[in-house]
Amino acid sequence: MKSKQSRFPGLAVSGLIGAAAVAQAAAAPAEITINGDRIFPESITSAPDSSLIFGSIGQHAIYRAKPGSATADVWIAPNTEGISSVFGVLADPKSNTLWACTGTPAFGPPQPGAPPPAPSKLYAFDLKTGAHKAHYELPTQGAFCNDIAVDAAGNAYATDTNNMEVVRLKKGGQQLEVWAGNGGFGPKGGVLDGISVLGTRVLVNTLGTSKLFSVPIGADGKSGTVTEVKLDKPISRPDGMRSFGKDKLLIIEGGNGGKLSKIALSENSGKVETLKEGYPDGPVAVTVVGTTAYVVEAQLAAMRGGPDAKTNPFHATSVEVGKP
Image (cartoon, rainbow, N blue to C red; front, top):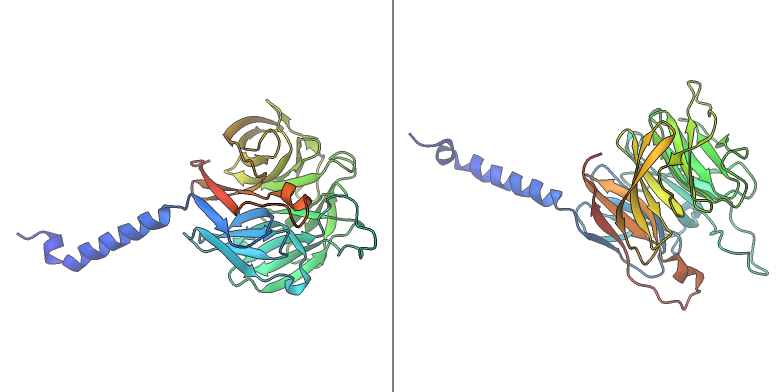
């Protein structure tokens, strides 16, 4: 009796092709190069199709690496709908939205005679096409939109670094509102930075004071009491972070040569585990595709060094992190 494969050769061939396609898709690139000069990428996010998206401080643009590609190119053109330097980016598949924080870099005092900085805004783009959907000014004077997270109900949260506040855009809302702060994260200058949502709480970190905070989301949507998360060992200059499973965070540490760390949370305490260290160009953000994390380095020291400062190719590198 002939085997099923010999009787139906097409099925066998199509099965092999399908298996090969799955294997190819699973082989995530070890490194993603962002094409261009003086990009200074400050954030990275990933879409459900495994594409990677980067915000650019230097080029006022958003870059995208197609699924499986080892290079990223301009996707949302410079200055589209008035975007300036792009900081945090976040893919929100449920609403088909790419959120992006834009504004003027708060690195040092303004130059004499320079025009006033553009107001910092939270932008919403179509996640599939990159088309502009809306944008929203932050509510507090002197605001600086840094990074974004979204809760299960579809509300968007962003860190206002300068004012040490978390602002919120209610699902379907038309303007941002101050959601948490009022000194709870420390005085101005603490550099409120990375943000994530785990279950019914918002987690934020402060780059300047190297702390992690937890804020409950009440049943009415209002913020609860801000509490510092007690860690079993210090973190150094935390920056971008992403939720990882139900009770963990992946977090970038910019100090001590740069690290990717994992924090396992239990109520308001956390256990820190270093996953990789040694990022000479300054790590700023992380995202996860499957079981692979990508860490992007911004080279902000070169940006501060002026237009003649030497830069290396801008890239994100992979780290296998497994399942949460």
